[in-house]
Image 1 (tube, rainbow, N blue to C red):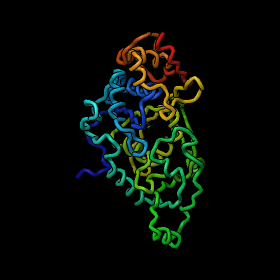
Image 2 (image 1 turned 90 degrees about the vertical axis):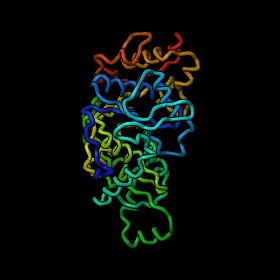
Image 3 (image 1 turned 90 degrees about the horizontal axis):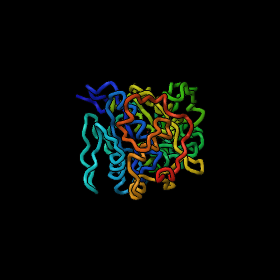
Image 4 (image 1 turned 45 degrees about the vertical axis):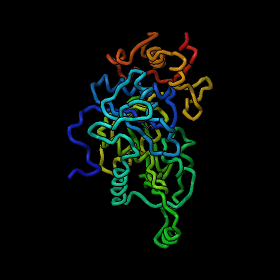
Length: 338
Ligand code: GLU
């Protein structure tokens, strides 16, 4: 019988993904990362997976999934597996060998992963009520999202310390025991990257006290079980990668290759953010910007084209991640109307 942590047989040798969270309208920086992830996989002739990272229910917006799928289609992107956008208010059933593709429907899988980590002694109960436990369901987009290093408070609890806390009825979060020492991995754009998880964030949350699974656990498990070989995403997640690699190693699951691309910044030099309501695709559509014009501008900021208008598929031939400009790209909306 197939286990919850088995990788489906027969998946192709090159698989990539885009993994948006339906927490607000896609902004131009999200669109740029999606375009690059899509181009990498299309150029390699692989399969592109759309995965919806909707674990942080309190932050999901109504209609967010439909809107982001429609925006990506408008840009001219497509995907081989994942949910299909249907008429307004409806997202058609998820299709494909690794379904479901919505994290909110994969909880049994994450529980199986936690059970395996528990068997190996790699998780422990944490009764601390710290802000970072609440934040764990979302991807950390900067050091402020990770909070201070966890000092190991509950790791040191023995049976006598645990008993009253369990009896109090207060629910525990689960933390992953970070492996000590620096971890080095090869990033497709940054080269060798070395980060010491135990020193920087310490033991990190893999399930919140309210039962919500953490981003770090879900993303690592899903990338492995969906047979993802290439993870291309924003530079802000570089620091999360060693956490995901440690989880994969502890679970005995394969690790993908990682490619962290520079982020787009606004006129203030700050990274774009859904929370700040930075220029989003819906706004551009309403203001009559053609998708080919947006794609050309995004590709221009990566150093990929000088064209004024272009379809994503016209950028596939000869695309190579090493050609992506390394500096953070500024976005100037005025260029779209010129
Ligand atoms: N869902 C995450 C986000 O919205 C991206 C996760 C990833 O690409 O690993 O930022």
